[in-house]
Length: 375
Ligand code: NAD
Ligand code: ZN
Image (cartoon, rainbow, N blue to C red; front, side, top):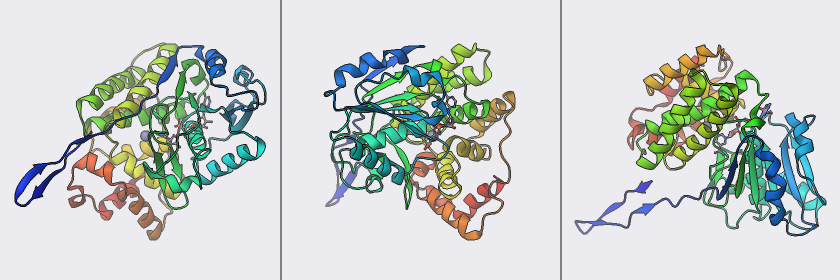
């Protein structure tokens, strides 16, 4: 994205140097059904020596599944199973870093995250925090990280968040829910094996898939849109329509949703998300509602911002017979609402992308409360 910064100097307008974002990309990616079995070969040249293990952070939904037997463990490699029932937290990252540092005398050769956005984000954060001093909460924000992360690999097992391509790891901290956005956050390697996304419940498949769909709608309808973001956003949106409204075989559908997630992530990487994400962050912070579901709960009520997007969303929802929870905000006090609204309103770049620099003229706490009350 271009940063516009003409400045006034002694009544003359001087064009300051334009700064374009220099986006880090995942340097290596393997795609294909069964490609997970190449992981051992991929990791081998990255092994520092036999005392520097690979640590695999794995969604505990796989604890009793065959996938675990396919993890290429050698030497003193370790698997740590982690529940994805809650959003990842800064204190959880700190505890994992402590656990790894106390167990091994050397830094690991790398971290491999296997799971959805929760496990991918935790893995990125742990890889960063093994080489940066202090707690993870200190680095929530933009470009606060000083040192490169250790080598880290992402293996998504559910498609939609785009966490596999992004330069952020979204964490719930003591004071805020915010990503560690940095050039060091992005994975060094991603393994895209659509076969791993089998066995997800229909509801979870829909919620996480809709995260991708909403990324596209917010990016394509935002004021930050540019040809780079548009090209990825349009492709991802078309893939979402095929997956959620077409008649694909289940294998085709898994393959396409995995690529939609990738393209959706690429689209927002060079633009920004919008109203649904700002409000969903509030729900996540105040009620612990997970990202995908939170986005859906909010998005159904956003016709005033995204009329076409909401119409298509409702079509997809009824096609798959998805019933969203109701009365989610029913028991909240005024002060709970105020906190949630202030978290949402604090997401300035998201509002600016959605509505332009004068967004404060139309976005008021009262207006947001009315939306939340419908949820
Ligand atoms: P998730 O990782 O939270 O997992 C959702 C559920 O699906 C969990 O119960 C998990 O155990 C289960 N699951 C995952 N894979 C499965 C499989 N193959 N079979 C059966 N069950 C499976 O889901 P998500 O929606 O991918 O991730 C949400 C997280 O991603 C949030 O914490 C959000 O903040 C984060 N996020 C990050 C970014 C980023 O750019 N870093 C972007 C969007 C969202
Ligand atoms: Zn999202």
